[in-house]
Image (cartoon, rainbow, N blue to C red; front, side, top):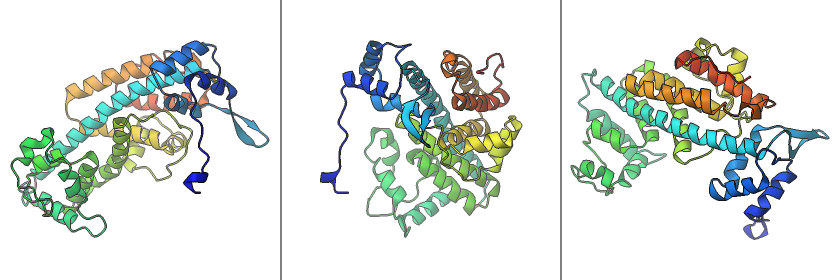
Length: 335
């Protein structure tokens, strides 16, 4: 379709949003229309807060769903927006901890390899990247973007950086600090294949999903929307299956939930955090935050979701994981 023939949706002003939402059968009983307008004006944008409506049932008329919602008050959307913000903060912390301890894991593995001096594997990787036929210089270009950055001045001051030449002789302890999380996972895969450390390979597939989650939280994307989607049909890693079995999550339950990409990513992050982080202090801090978020804030208005089987089932899924692996008291429940 030509751009000049594309019919663009008109931008709605805040005062027009409430009537529009009411036309979708979204109620304003717990929050008044005026309070909702004020909330949209000061705290959230329309696109973000209405993303959560997809977690609620719609009317089914003449064999198809229509864009009108069953039992949905604007207050429910506000509550989910606040919870989502808290969840994003927690998973940002979890994913950057995973990234940090992955670097430590790589360094510890290298320490036990006689062939490795901390330069060999990096030079091999940079060689491969520089002459890669499909994506030449992908890592090089990513690194060059950071030249001149105040955060990396100390590292780059030790090297002659010519954008037309291949980088070389960067020690691994510095190389790991100047690559992105996604590139770190790709380097990890290259490294374990080169040194045939097969037992680490399953972690690569898990970490790829965690990179997606890290990117989402870093860009402040909504995490708790579209839980009804079944958009991931790849068989989960055996480590994750065993993890969920040990958490008391049955086969049908886990298969259903892991078909949703966001639920899968968060599951993988919770698994990998306990697997890779070695600091008991960091673990205790995350357990404390997870406990407060999951058993206090999330269920503060649990009556909002009495008729929402989707959200209640997701809560039960993560409750099993948290109870088993994060030593959370079982005193609360969303039923």
